[in-house]
Structures are given as C-alpha cells and as structure tokens.
Image (cartoon, rainbow, N blue to C red; front, side, top):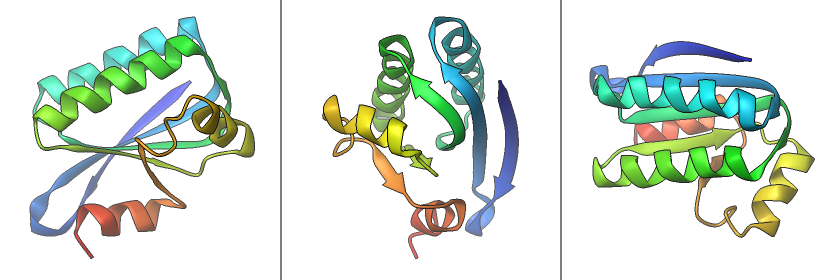
Length: 117
C-alpha cells in the first residue's frame, strides 16, 4: 500500500512523500512505479520514500527505485529514503545500493537535506 502526501519546503519547493507499507514486490511495485512516474511527469523532482512500514523489497522493487533515481538525477532532482527497517537496510547493503541511494534517518532530516540545511 502506498500513501502519497505533498510537503512544502523552503522556496516553495514541493516535496512528494511516499509512505510505503507491506512488501515491495511485483504487485506493489507496479503501483509504486506508476505513482512515482506520474509525479515526475508532472514536474515533481524531490521525492521522499518513507519505508517505516515496509517489510521487504524484491528485485522488482529495487528496479523501480533505481529507474526513478536515474531519471531524477537527469532532472537535478533527489530521491531520499527514510525510516529504513533493518531488513530493508540489509537488502540495500547487500545489493550495494546503500551507498548509492540517499538515506536519512527520518523525515525532518530529509527535508533539511532538500532545503540544503
């Protein structure tokens, strides 16, 4: 399940927050990918992915995040992961994505990073 919220940062920057719960697998990845792409297509280039309630992530879910990350890099955007569970963190570490994706401990730190604080 995915809940999407919008947050205003400094300088009227819109940040889209995706709160993802459950397993990030083939089925949920289709929804996540569609939502992310819709927001990027509509001009949103600052995304925060809150994975506090996510249980696990499969290779299909990793592909969705990698594609979004690469696309946002070409647009000078950012995608920040927050509230990683130990299991999700371990998956990102094993796949060597932990050092590629931008990770913050919580939502406040992610918003500060986007605000360059």
